[in-house]
Length: 249
Ligand code: NAD
Image 1 (cartoon, protein in one colour):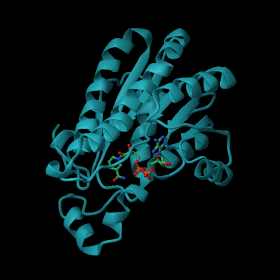
Image 2: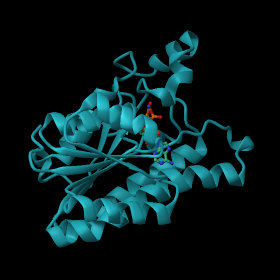
Image 3: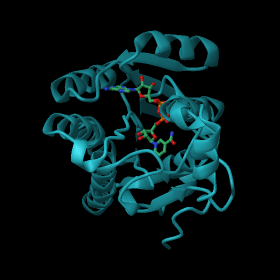
Image 4: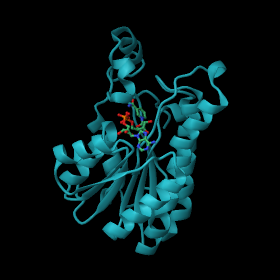
């Protein structure tokens, strides 16, 4: 996919799905901002991937920090065309063990962090005549929990789906497209507990018609499509990349 002349911010771009997106943007001739809490991993990814990459350390659970980091990125790079809200954490606590603190932590990072990042770039995209936002939700947001994530995670990702549709609706007149992607089990650090446990893996993949977990690049392909000019008339869409798990039309 062609990203020539485009600059993209990828939150959580240091590893897993985010890193695969960074790779795709660079391969397409674009410039990628790795915005991650783990600066060391972000610098390592930058070194390994090469290409036109920039690293900014940022904590997506800190709204003030996001706004100041985004202002700095816009000042430094002048133009942001694409935002991929990928940073996220999973919560696996059963409902009766879920405390107010656990709930708040997951909602703050996965949902409020996505809101703040969208909000921090929206005015800039509006002034530029448009842009493309891709938010990473999850099958958990559609079916009340994922193969790993439970209530707080499911609620945060359902919120991301609603937020993406709302931004698509309001941003359309300004040329701002907003779509979301719902992965199922993808082999990354987040799902290490599945991957490391053969019995758990077998139970999980039985629910997936394609019979396996995804590689990060397979999720990145749909994210990159939504981000790219190929999806110029696609907005408010929720793309499942789940091996057939959800099948909800
Ligand atoms: P990962 O754990 O491999 O990578 C997450 C990245 O986000 C890391 O680089 C990490 O440093 C960064 N990060 C974590 N907290 C952060 C914070 N507070 N501020 C900034 N960056 C932070 O995860 P992944 O599996 O690649 O997941 C990426 C996205 O995909 C997440 O939103 C996740 O919920 C979603 N997702 C993953 C799966 C899966 O099976 N892996 C399934 C569905 C949805």
